[in-house]
Amino acid sequence: MRKRGHRNPAPLFALAGMTLLTSAALAQQPQSGWSIGSPGSAGSTGSAGSAGSTDAPLPYSPSATAAAQGDPAQSGGITLKLMGEIVTVHPSVRLELRHDDNVYLAPSGRIADQILVLIPAVRLEARKAANSFSLRLSTTLGQYQKNTADNYTNYNVSGLANLILSTRLRARISGDYLNATDPRGSTNDANSAVPSAYDQLQGRGIVSYGAQGAKGRIDVELGYLRRRYHNNREITAGNDRDVGDIGATFYWRVGPRTSLLLQGKHSKIDYTLPASTLGSIENALLAGAVWDATAKTTGTFKIGMVKKDFEDASRDSSRAISWTGEVRWSPLTYSHVDVNLTRAPAETTGGVGNFIDRTFTGARWTHDWSSRLTTQASASYATDAYQGVARTDNTQNYGINATYKMRRWLSFGGDYAHATRSSDNSGFSYQRNVFMLFVNAAL
Image (cartoon, rainbow, N blue to C red; front, side):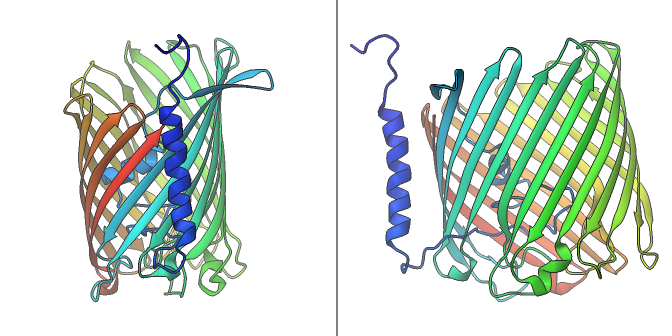
C-alpha cells in the first residue's frame, strides 16, 4: 500500500521520458528529412497589436483554439519551495504529426509535406496572500520531412501577475517575449529562401478601481509591443514596428449580472524604417455590455467608431464602425457554443495598401461526450478589405477535433482543418487541408 501523501512517480517519469526520447530522436537524425520548423500559418497578415504565434494553425480551427489555450488542462503539478515561497510546477510536452497539403498557401502547384512538431513547456504558479503569479516557458520545434529550409525553433516566455491591492484597487500585469517566424507564403512579402524570423516583446498593465459588485468601476490600461525582424531584411525591414496604446473602460452595473460599458483607446503605430509612410494613430470609442444573464449565457459585446490617421499626408485617413463580441452559450454543463465577432483595422505587409479593414465571424462547439472524450467543431468567415488598393480576401475555415483523455496526465487525439481563400488578386487565393495526430502529457 502506498504511504499517505506520496505522489505516484509514474506520470513524471513518463513525461520526462517522452521529452528526452523524442528530443534525442530529433537530434540523432539530422539527415532524415525531418528538421526543426513550423507547419505554417493560414495567411494572416497580422495586426499591429497582435502578439503573434509561434506556430499559427488555421484561424479559429480546433487546433488554433488548443494553441491559444497553451498547455493542456492541468491539475496537481509538482509543489516546490523556492526562496521561502510555495511554487507549483506544471511540466508538459505535446507531440504533433501533421500532413499539410499546401504548405506555401499557393493558388496552384500546391506542395504538400509532413511536419513533426514537439512543444515542451513548463508553467510555474505561486500565490501570496490574495495575489497570484504565473510564469510560462515553452519551445516549439517542428521538422518538415521534405522542405527543410522552412525549419525553425521558436521560444516563448510569458508572465502574469494578478494583484489585489485593496478592496477597491486591483492590477493585472502581463509580459511576453516571443522568438518566432512568418512561414513562407503567410504574408504579402515577396518570396524568400527561408522564413522571416523576428523577436517580439509585449507588455500590458491594467489597473481596476471599484469594489466587486459596486455600481460603477473603471479599468485603465497601458500596453506596448515591439517587433523586429532579423533576416530577409530586403523585404522585412518595412515590417519592424512599435505599438503603444493607452485606454480606459468604464462599467456601470444595471443588474445583478449585467453591466454597460464605455471604452476609449488611443494607439500609436510607429514603423522604424525611415522611408516608411505607414505610421499612424488610431482612436477608438466603443460602447456595449457585459452580461451573465443566465446560467447558460455569458458574453461581451461592444460597438463604436475607430479613426485611423496616417502621419504621411499621401495616405488617406479612415473612419469606420468597429465591433467586438464574445458570447458563450452552454445548453448543458458539458456542452458549450462560443461565438466571436470582430471588425477592426489591421496592419498590412509587403506594402499592399494602407491597412486592412478586417471582419471576422467564428463559432465553435465543444462537447464532452464523457469524462474522457471531448470533441470540437468550428467554422469561421473572414473578410480582409485592403484600403488604398482594389483587393479583398474572403477566407472560410472549418475544423473538427477529438481528444481522448487516457489518464489524468495523458491525452491524445486528431484534428482536421480546411481553409479556402478567394481574393481579387488570384495569386493570393488558395485551398488548404491539414490533418493532425497529437499526444499531450502534462502534470
